[in-house]
Image (cartoon, rainbow, N blue to C red; front, side, top):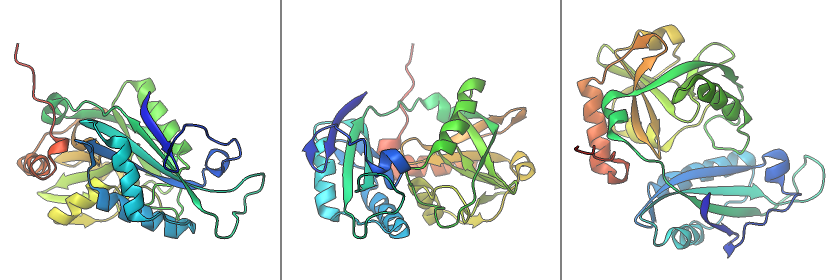
Length: 278
């Protein structure tokens, strides 16, 4: 269920069957948390959108005009999630894009997920996915519309009844979760995968990298399982501790607890819901 849709600034939800986004996944997207009618981390989201447009050779909309449309759709909503899609314009069959094709703007507003404190106090359970991420350096890091791998990986988690799954690439290196970036703590140090070949460079990941000393290097499953703490980052859910990967249990270390507290202080929109006192 969506709370509203804007297509090229107009209230409409009609999508052309010839859309290159629908037929080829030819486009980009951002998932943006809305708090009190305003987008959280807007500058960071637009910067990644710019990187993606450059990588795909797409036209980038005017930043101020796009922000105006985002705020117009989000106005009056205390808390929501906005999905912003840029789709390369074009019609008919054929993979080749038209030179200089404009980018269609599709904005949709949705209910925001709840952030129960128990998940952040105790952590979430994850599993290893059998699905592997493809390796494609030209697309690594950006949020393009081709997400069938994520769909299949998340389906594994749903069938197993766990909140998230960790995914490796074809070389066996751990890249990320199905919808979040991965960090591990070992001997008091933080590590995260490099995302040179696959994966998405998340906005919350960038926030952590700007506040903490993190070594970016290849990680393999055995190293993750030897960690003192494992956590995921996502721009809508924040920093999520992992309590279990199948049979291996982890704890929320003082370093991790302090990092979560800092995030909630700097980005109050990501603060979990207080627990109900019975």
